[in-house]
View 1 (cartoon, rainbow, N blue to C red):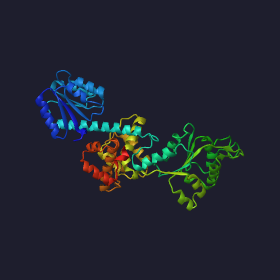
View 2: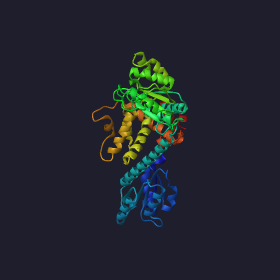
View 3: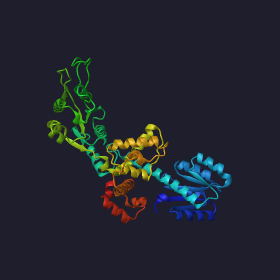
View 4: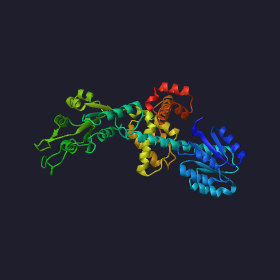
Amino acid sequence: MSEQQSVIFIDDEQHIRQANAQTLELAGFEVQVFESAEQALPLLGPEWPGAVVSDIRMPGMDGMQLLARAQEIDRDLPVILVTGHGDVAMAVEAMRQGAYDFIEKPFSAERLIDTVRRAVGRRCLTLENRSLKLELEIQSAPGPRIVGNTPAMRRLRATIAQIADTDADVLILGETGTGKELVARALHEHSKRRDHNFVPVNCGAVPENLIESELFGHESGAFTGAKGKRIGRFEHSNHGTLFLDEIESMPMPVQIHLLRVLQERAVERLGSNLTIPLDLRVVAATKVDLAEASTQGEFREDLYYRLNVVTIEIPPLRERIEDIPLLFQHFLLVASARYDREIPPPGADQIRALLSHRWPGNVRELRNIADRYVLLGENLDYDLDRLIHGADSEVALTLPQQVECFEKSLIVQQLTLQNGGLKATMEALGIPRKTLYDKMKKYGLDKSQYK
């Protein structure tokens, strides 16, 4: 039985302890009974994965005192108080002080089981969120923003770590919304240039008649409307990193000028004959195949080969579905801090909805969904599947595909949280060892990837 189903039941009357322990055990819980709160306290800790059920009136430490001590240990420990008729006002006050719930005597077995099940479920979510937060914190090579544990993301982080502190120009390939600028920033922040400027330019967003001035700068009077000197993005990024996003959108005449700057590592402002030497790294990004574009005459072949010193490819989100729960939790934490809102914890149905979507907008789309979830979740009785897919849209994956994605995601998540420990993973998932081995083989998972 998984330790996540643990319950501590405290009552000074033996027959009450035995009867309620039997009720909870038949419902699938692992129950430990104690006749005093003092006996139970040593078991409680920040990582204890269960709920406490305690009578209020007991010799020695009573239920209110136990609640206070439990709150000191961990404010999120769920404590359920059992009250007599005259103790209801006291129990209400206890809930104000942080008790999870109270049950008034006499109570039915169903009432006890339902309350305990909800409390244990919340405790599991609390501990899981803590583990995910810790996982996000240790994702620090090269940076906490590049989140994911799939082999593709591990290779991506390893590549960045290997080339970050070199001067090699880099070409980043990835669909819209995959996080190309985040990778470029990671390269910059983990290089010797980190103390100098990181200068992003979206080549597709700058008007064609202004892009040369934007990149290379100009002198006063260089063209009509040039009333003063302007420092271009190349010069501004000297000693730092210049990030050219959507490089495929750059006009052909500007590509010629760019090639010369890259080759000579020097720039001349428009309207000037003065050559300004540059010490910078250029990181370019594209969502199209530049080799194919150069074959079609839509991109200069010589510029493509000049940019393509090192290539980093970012996989689309649909190819790393196992990372979605971790990414979603990351974005929930960010949105919670940004909007100063509590996070409504997503359940299994919500996670299944996330895994079933094809994510054409990739990580950016997932981040937007997380923002909307935090902003609307506490005020609307809504369905996350409807939030993602829309009221009338159909799920992109078949049911068997959804089930496999969800199953693989849960196994990967537990292997990550348990540092590849198969016994702990088996217990957390509640499956036999052979079943776990068979499913890992089916999905191509190796425990060594998660240590």
